[in-house]
Length: 483
Image (cartoon, rainbow, N blue to C red; front, top):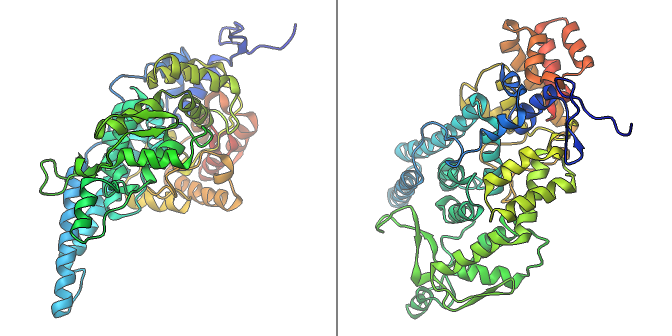
């Protein structure tokens, strides 16, 4: 009879392109726990009749949902500018008369900016914990991590939340080129990677500075390098240092409006800082002038087969396995190229791909995913950033603080070290101490894992001496820790 096929809910053998699919019961559980952020009560039941359709319905042209509240990036940067000005004034006063360089008003402004960043992260976490469209939210979080900005300074921290709301979420189901341009021209990215001050060595601004006897501003290659290495074609695409430098020259002038500019604290192209002349990047010549030059480079990078492969591989790693099936990567790459980089079509290809529904839960949850899935399992949400931030920081994923432009790691080995598991156990025990006494642990196990719940875990939960112990066992089970 050959290889045994998985049976559907009604006993029908199901195949897609020669690859067997799990039962609808198991696919529903996978839809909520792998493609989503962990099952809320009733979510697996909602997905059971048509798991693929349940996910496909969450793909929409207007992009991802927006967390509640929050000022825009221009307002935040205006507050940062006010803080910096008052800090300078207080420092000058200290020098002249003595006193505290960080006076009470200055400290209050600093605290307010940090509190607002905390509110941004809490709003995002609450959205993740309560949304009925968790695949849409996971998709948005993937792209936010792909285009990481990290709170390496007070200014970047202040606009990390607005960056996600303004540059990422509206574009996650649109054209990748639009997402690339939106992220690369957002003040958060320009500040994070020091692009805002990059000046062409032969630009009018540099010439003026030299004539005035001032040190001319320099060329900064950070953003150009990360766009090539991380955001588009990938490190194996065959580009060289000369390509990075040429792209950086094309991007000179990408900056942020000052308080007296027509559009303060927003993206501004400074033509006088742009390096004149044609550029050659990865064998292609760009004769465009001004801002159009860098945008043309981005357009070509977005259309590159190297970018299609890089993004397809990264998506397959994130959703399915640290060593993804080549067939899945090929499907996603083809969907990208056939649609001219439309991310909604790539998302549909992911949902349709049989390899994405492998019953083996190969992915290990990051601390954020673990925490959010825990709240979702009991139909709750984090009460405050003072509760959430210490948990995530202790587990190794401090809010808005990815360790590098590469973003947070996706590989299991980063998150499943013995000390990290001990910290997860402590969190699980503390969480269970708060909520378990009002819950039926066996029912919770069923609603949280569905058909992914194995008999050994179900038995361990049922035989636990207390509800708290039962819930902690469930949260620390391999079935809950993996997706």
